[in-house]
Structures are given as C-alpha cells and as structure tokens.
Length: 171
Image (cartoon, rainbow, N blue to C red; front, side):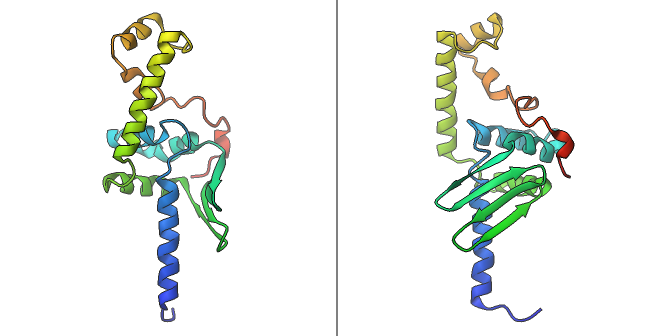
C-alpha cells in the first residue's frame, strides 16, 4: 500500500463521521433510539440483535440535505450525494457499531430522553381519550395510575409490526 496523503485521511474520517451521524439518528421511528438503547443495555438475546435491528429499521430509508440511509435485508446503506459516497454496512456491523456508540454515551443523549418522555406523555393522553385500543382494561388502569412501563417495553422483543420477509434477511 502506498503512502497516505492528508486528503486520504480526511476522506476516511469523513466516511466514519457520516456513518456515525446516520447511526445516531436511530431507526426513524418514534422511540426507535430508546428501543435500540434499551435492547443493548439489557444485554439479552444479543445474538439476535442484528436481525432485530433489521426489523426495527424496516425496509426503506430517509435522506436530508443529500445525506441519508437505506435499509434492506442486506444491511444499512449510508450515503452522501455531494461526493457520491455509498457504504453498505451489514446488520451485524450496524449492531456492533451501535453497541459501541451506546457504550461511549454518544448514541442516546439527554435530548433523546426528553423526547422519549414527551412521547410517553402523548401515549398517556391517548389512553385517556380511548384512542389506544390494544391495552387491556387492567393495563389501561395501570397507565392511568402512573405506570408507563408498558409503553417502554411494548416493542422490545416482539417488533411484530416490522418487516415480514425475514427469509430475505442476510447475516
């Protein structure tokens, strides 16, 4: 391998920054960052974490100002149009990087926790007005009495509303 120039080093850092930025945006779903952080912190079923992430992200993607990501059975593709960067991360690599970001305290910030608390309050209002129908009467009463833990754990392991085509998932 030849000698690296300063431009090569900047490009490598730029790609890593892009990956980190995209991963730190979460799955794109309400409370997705909370669910991902919680899954990692619990440390249970970590061998299934990459497959769980595939379901959490679903199929599709997002972009903003020419940067974004696309998720598929193959993994998470991170891109930036301005310099034509496309990086495909396998779900196992996404899982490893997210574990590292959570351990470093970079992934889930105070701002993310504040948003999570606002989301819990909105869900409480939905229980009060009857628009949440999937809770039993006993669960609704627990929520009305202040127990919001039902909302924090509801999609931790089930994630049943995610991707249905698991046969396309690639390890």
